[in-house]
Length: 365
Image (cartoon, rainbow, N blue to C red; front, side):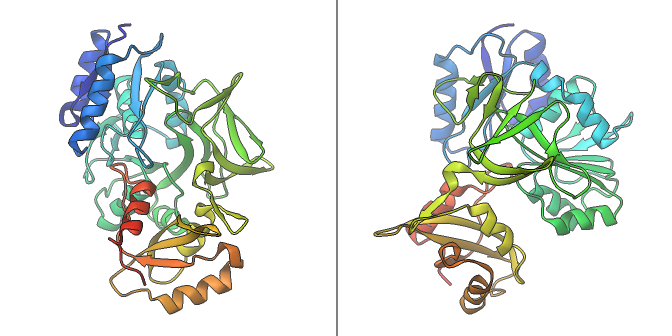
């Protein structure tokens, strides 16, 4: 296998990926919507860097907190999970999988790799009259359900962030089997939930939690990064990207990336725990919690609320709910309302959210 990694434009991804792999090269799909400086940085990296031995696929992290990293892996690190995914979704001959996230997203690239290995035919779109399967984030899945954009859906593989319970309920009421999963571009699949009762280890994966950090041992882990350090850590056969969580029996509860934790007045606040509660409030379509610098206390907990419609939430109601639902140190002290910045794959872009709040681009409530 050649060590040359070749950029691929998203618009002709599948055919170009197939062509490059057949010629012994490693494809990397670029995002058409990247700013010029991000694109130039990735192209420069490809030009000057020799991938590690065994590299057969190159994928991008979401870029939710910084410029995207290039994750490199073997073919078998994905291919070993193809039969498991097919079994969980109940894949049938002739199935078509709807892929709303761009092919630069690692989760979409996984499904393209599966398709080239004989898996369901991919459809890179947000709508399809013939798609029977779905693979994407909760953001995209919610949008597809709301628009009726895939009336023939039979099963959905949903990952990248927590799936709201009401979205699963809505999908299942329409006869759609939902398989939620937790993983990372570096680890691939770690845990799954196919019944709504919580995450448990994905077939072929062992999970351990040490000092609140999730570790996984499986054949699905990537080799590492094309250049420079990243969050992937190893301890023998075990690997972690720093996500925090806990195990209760065979169930895994994910609390978010450790470096997202907010230190405020001597307390540690995990944003995902606050966000999960805020999303249950009337008038709230989505929420993201970040820390904003504050002399003397470290950081203040700030919440950006994306309302279901303009004016659907107000400061008085939000503060009253926070007093009722959270301990004092965990209550958001700063409230904002507006559209939440997201990556191209639909994940929350926390660094961009923090920048917009700090710059005053998003109004306070």
